[in-house]
Amino acid sequence: MPITALNVSSTLARRKLGRFLTKRSRREKIRDIMRHENTWREKLVILVPYLWMLLFFLMPFLIIFKISLSVTEIAIPPYSPLVTFEEGAMQIILHLENYTFILTDEEGTYLRSYLKSIEVASFSTIFCLIIGYPIAWALSKCRPATRNIMFMLLIMPSWTSFVVRIYAWMALLKKDGLINDVLMALGIIDSPIHMLQTDFAVYVGIVYCYLPYMVLPLFTALLKVDYSLIEAAYDLGCRPVKTFFSVLVPQTKSGIIAGSMLVFIPALGEYVIPELLGGKSSILIGRILWQEFFNNRNWPLASAVAIMMLTILAIPIVIFFKVQRKQMEAASA
Image 1 (tube, one colour):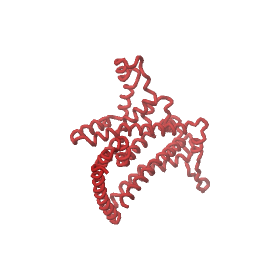
Image 2 (tube, one colour; image 1 turned 90 degrees about the vertical axis):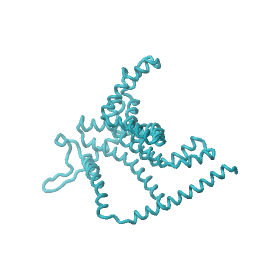
Image 3 (cartoon, helix red, strand yellow; image 1 turned 120 degrees about the vertical axis):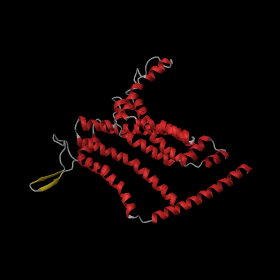
Image 4 (cartoon, rainbow, N blue to C red; image 1 turned 180 degrees about the vertical axis):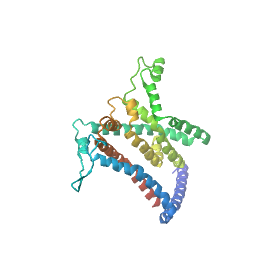
């Protein structure tokens, strides 16, 4: 065996031993924390987020779920009550026809909107990951002073109103907009390209608005990367692409999952971007909800659509918590 390979192997062995000792001390700390009994002050601090989730997530969810089990009526509010009293008897009437209508609609409008929303959210997440990973890598390798400036440039557009930024993209993407004018002035195209009111414009708007939510978790994960493993892989003759996927990506898996969820979940129910940048064929679930609530005033059907969308969103959330639990168990094992 060459001397360089022996040196690399011994170096890796020492680093693995050091990481093992570090993990052992970390496991002992985790066990001490788990054995620690919470005081009343700590319990009070833990109670605050639970109350927040109860008031602003669980209660609205139960209200929407209750409305989804009723039928529409010409009344205020525009749906039938679930509990009625007749001749001293209480009756609870639950209607499931809203859910069956969504699943058995002959035109398939709702199922197509779900599939279209999942498609747009998935591809937008992939595009944000492809674009955001190099940005996060560059931020992690910058000097602190330069990093602050880069962070400022990344977050500064978020200081402007969300709707104003989308209107700015409308001005850029229209036929007589800046992009077409520049391309025609350079001689790249002879006639304006139709970009506004297309799926392309929707992807541009979603990626532009949600890219920072992908970059920040990736940046945090890249700061924790052990770059000595990358150097060892290069010394052992591993190619850059293989090193990236076999050494770097596994170490940043938590950042990839967190960033993907931060992009996928809001993009799935996005309304403003498809409404302003998308065409008539861009019928996403957010636009369906708006139409049923405000145009058709069919609150029960709209509530059923929202409940099914939340059910779809629960799938990546459950996967994320399972991954986190496995990582915690691996760290404490």
